[in-house]
Length: 170
Length: 469
Image 1 (cartoon, helix red, strand yellow):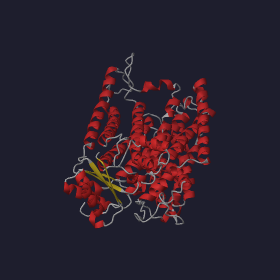
Image 2 (cartoon, chains in turn orange, cyan):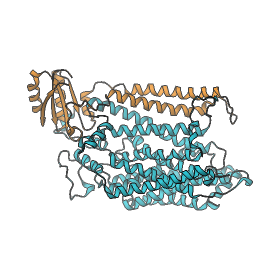
Image 3 (cartoon, chains in turn blue, orange):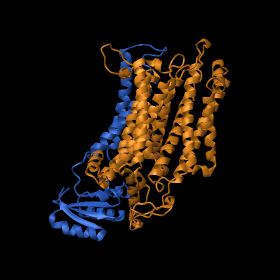
Image 4 (cartoon, helix red, strand yellow):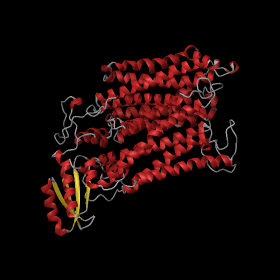
């Protein structure tokens, strides 16, 4: 976050928190919002793109499909034991393996994407975080220079922040 | 089906102690109430919890001793013998896999359908899924007799250049169940992360704080994290949905791919999937009803949720009953003497009590739910849920025992001698499942905090200000 100070506003109302985000965007300041739940109004105000999760999941799923079929086909060719008069490469039977591997690899890729994109684990870096943000409060953090902190602080209070604190930059 | 939950909400209007003296079904739920109610479950355990855990451990010990005896003396200690080589262990395997299925149905399928009644029950259902698969997975290992060679099922490079048979439904099962366990566990853990962060923020001791900080991975609910989380959760649900259908279909193919009278039927996959959901929803009720009472969750898990679950039971009971009738009709219509005899043997043969027990528990008893007051009668639902699970165990017993005991050649027909070892392992499995559930409800939020909050109206000063977003 840009600036050597972070102003943390604690909001009791979602619409106030969104108004604070809009104000930060207007001023060209960087911000971060903490929220007890995901909310599509907040998401609309803060996000501009979809994110790459589904793309990464798709790559995982296609890799799984290929790996599942490849495993079954290659193992069968390497040990060509005919059973029940079925073909050695018995595609209908291998669909199950390919199907399960598609889902398995897709899920693992999705988990990997989630962990990387959310920056997890994040045990030691929760600057500006307040335990109330997981209960019923919304937190809006705005990064700015020390000269501007008073102005930002007053603006947040004006919008409806219940508390405002100034911390060192993140 | 009813959408279920319609918590009346009064955001920011109530304190943490709200609800005192009010009918729990009418409490106005807000974010703080959800936190307080669920986190109370994590308070230090009392005598009752220790007694329950001790009971589970005793059952596990009985199972372990029985299994140890079987290992020492060989598979003869179990009743497994020709012609019923699958016996009680595979009955238990299919029963527990079935129990597992409803968890994913409630968490994934109902999520995609935006069914709000899933919110207060899905966490318990997911936990049930993971622990039930852990229980189910024990039975093939116990059944093979030499569990230390179980890794032979996996395709790994070996000096004899042998590979498993990928055309066998038994290997499909290995892939299906292991994928199901992995994906269910991931889905379960991902869902838990934000709620564990809530527990971390409310923790009063250093040990708890450290435990929940690590297990929540330091989750802080910033807007970017939520954005990715929502997207990933939807994809997990989309991946888990076809998985639910595939896994029990694959389990049904363990039977249906075999040319055995009573097994070789195309109806098996949908019949098994419906049966799995039927038994799983019943098990969710069996677990949730005492939990709701003990931890005073009436404000979150309301009668309307039980009404919705009852309707799911009515639907799946109807499908299962239809499948039973179809099996008989198909056997008659086929004009195949072996099929016809099999379906005469089920209601009138050696194992007839199991057939009639199954019919009563799965087809007749659930009909009571057509009477609306019974769908919200919690005591009645508790009894009925146990009856249904007995019925579903008997269903798997019927499929396995009757078909194997009367295959094609009368000279190869036979019965079964149940042994105390099988009984010990069966009750040990219930103890094993109960032990994990008991530990889980005391250490992690067993009711989804974030998901319930998501269906509550957010606290707003002026709704019109949200209009343009």
